[in-house]
Image 1: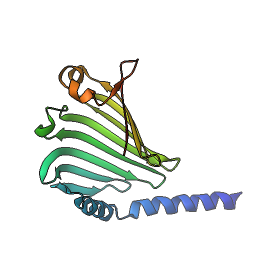
Image 2 (image 1 turned 90 degrees about the vertical axis):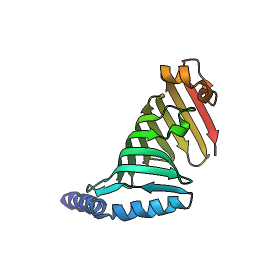
Image 3 (image 1 turned 180 degrees about the vertical axis):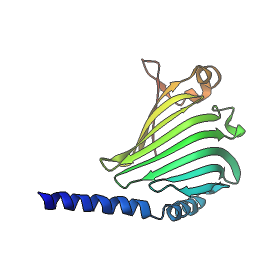
Image 4 (image 1 turned 90 degrees about the horizontal axis):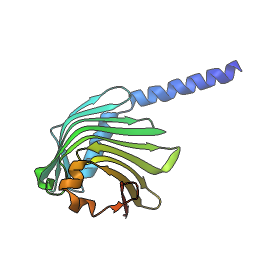
Length: 176
């Protein structure tokens, strides 16, 4: 029994040490370089390795050389079995102000090996709250929006892409 406990203790220590010593900044810069192939550039960010997570601050996102968003803070936690990205204070470009509210308070993206085919999304902002699932196998996005009064009043054209449910929420289903 003692050997089994020692084995699991050493295994846990090895996994935590591996996650702590993982070159998170290098992985981030590699991912940033991969995004450039799609004309998405992340600029002016500060990158800090926080041991078990990576913190990014003050990001400017450019798509096709047009500034699309400013993000105040991003926390990336890569644990292998469970991965999470938390984004705080997103300000979208004024170019989308006619289609969507430009302020997003938080965005949470989770992926777990316990549910390997789905990536879950949660967002909260001036538009209301959004809960979604991206199914990797079926290549399908399903999202439920609880719109704010601002969204219902000023952005009805954006709500046309959603299907209204009986409970007052809106559902978005799209294959990609």
